[in-house]
Length: 172
Image 1: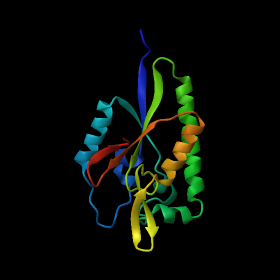
Image 2: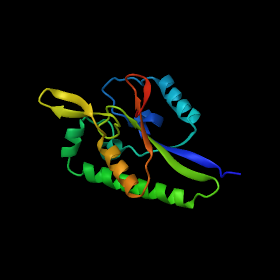
Image 3: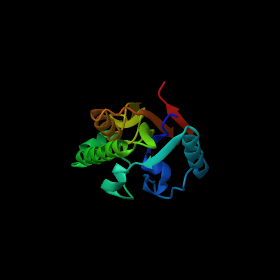
Image 4: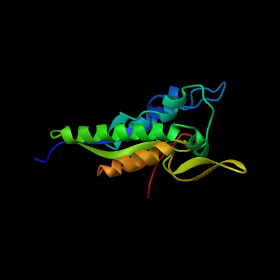
């Protein structure tokens, strides 16, 4: 009989806890039904979920300004903060995987949030002469997390939630 395997997905903090997201003054909780759909879809995909830390909230708290990746890269200490979070998390996940035998745990996915300067997977906000634009690329934390996981021989697929479009995106 084959061993039982749990597929683990690391999920951006704000998918499970909207309180850490950037909130413009007077904003309302957005799309709570969509959040339930996201979690339900991830469970239907066979994932066990583990919530990632929110690097922006842990660094700046709330309320905080809406920054681009470019702006966060210029804030003293933020990249080191993200690197430390990514390293500690990757070490912890590696340890959990090493300890699991029956059932076996495999890191299968990382779920990010589009247009986040920290947790974007496919489209990230950057600063340009014309203001904020979105370019292909990962957020700062997702970049560093991917590097830390790969350094440990872990190659999960990256999935992303797009709150504005109400969809879950996967790489082709």
